[in-house]
Image 1 (tube, helix red, strand yellow):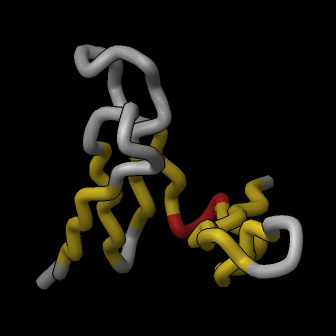
Image 2: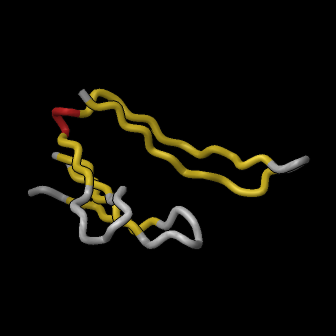
Length: 75
């Protein structure tokens, strides 16, 4: 049985909601400007490495926000 986890993300208040799907066989995300375009899909066999984390947005003397990121290296 293939379990899929779906998240809806919004990169800024001006951007539209985008969906990311994580499965055992693939990772699929919407990185297009148009809703009608097909999302980008990485198959498990094509992924060489990935990393994820949080980066702070630095203001003059303190953090003013944060960015959550996922970096994918494919073959």
